[in-house]
Image (cartoon, rainbow, N blue to C red; front, side, top):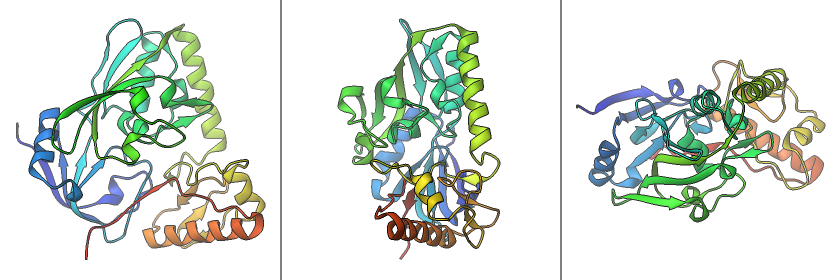
Length: 291
């Protein structure tokens, strides 16, 4: 099988924010062995691992190295035994939630509306509606910087709020193992439907965003602080604070990365001036690697 490679592709077409300049190279591995070969043959400093890019901001200048895009067909899901499910890292959270519902496995409903891959969800220990990845994850297989396949149990993954082992160490997650409890498929679907309805009622699901832009500050809610600072709808060009949910900064159509970054800093400064709290950005900003 020939490795699929693209050149000079606009990254805005790969991100939920719809922002990003040209990537020199995007490769689309379809097997774990292709991922291992890529890492063995390239400097890891020149590789950026990308899933569904739902929490990423690329610059207007793009990216000079190789983007390694992990998605389908690396998305197989297999029910093993005793509630244990093996999932390739390119599967989406929606795909895993739907698989669990079909097989009467409960515990992943919280992630059914998170628009990313399970690999990305593990890297940032994604969570929503009082659920977190760490609550159901059993372990992962990943490719390390030497191209070797490594297994780590959940207790070795340093999972905390929006953080994991992979926040501080290189590794390409290729397969995850989850352990779920048995449940009634109809009740599981009802919970998924309820969370979906709540998301669409309160969040700007019809606009380009990277989800919640800021981490939850201790003792506060970022959205409340932003709203209390009178920033609902505040915009820099086409980058704006959502009218629907102030915790989301959105791209109204043609925002540049520069505008989005200026908006982030304007929001942070105003909230600090008003409340004495510095908001920490949750969206990962990717250096271009260009000189």
